[in-house]
Length: 101
Image 1: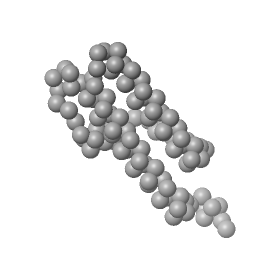
Image 2: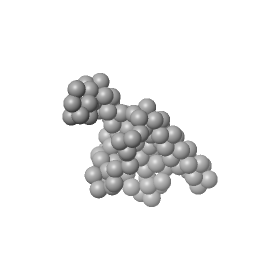
Image 3: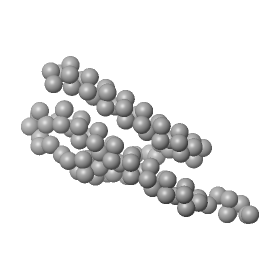
Image 4: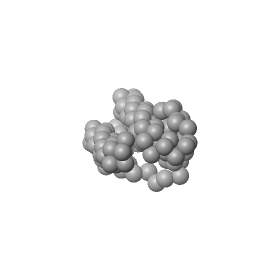
């Protein structure tokens, strides 16, 4: 086996990566749409769907630096994504409650 063959992702790894990106996009879209509903809609702006939020997130990520490192195993990256999502939604929810929501 050459170095090039060893560095190529297997079909399973590539599929896992695609699924992880898809799950991340949907979770982030849900969080963005929820936070939008809590903090932007009261200002008179119409609500957005999860699909619209996924598009806004994609637009943001197109210009933001990539936070993923190749040295992080996929399972750890998925766990970090889950913890970050829970933390962001929890902080937003507490702020929403404090604001009278």
